[in-house]
Amino acid sequence: QVQLVESGGGLVQAGGSLRLSCTAPRPTFSRCNVGWFRQTPGQEREFVAAISRNGGSSVYSDSAKGRFTISRDNAKNTVYLQMNTLKPEDTAVYYCAARDAILTMPPGVQPGSYHFWGQGTQVTVSS
Image 1 (cartoon, rainbow, N blue to C red):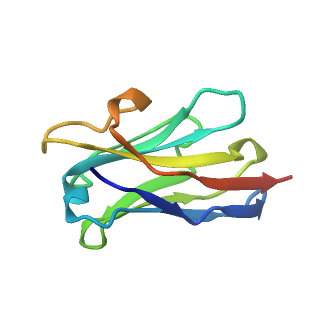
Image 2 (spheres, helix red, strand yellow):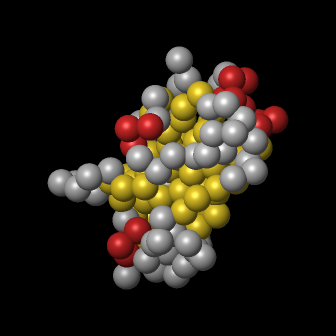
């Protein structure tokens, strides 16, 4: 079992930046691929970005490319999502997710490919 805790959400004006963190208290987090997803009321959970267990591979949604950067520090059991040039349409609850992965497994983009989820952190971008 991997317990995930997200932090860093908040209210920001359009064009601003936020950095989300996803932390797991267990060192086994370093053996997990990790993804960020977001969800607004009444909508499906949407893929944002994901990173492989060693940080060597990452993938982004079209809406995140060029604005968001996912990274990780396995020594701190933490994955980050740096979000720049935020837009009102980025407003959502952001969730991190993890799954145990072998070294060659690419990070997944489907919510169903992840086994563990955090509680989410609200990001609100005002216009």
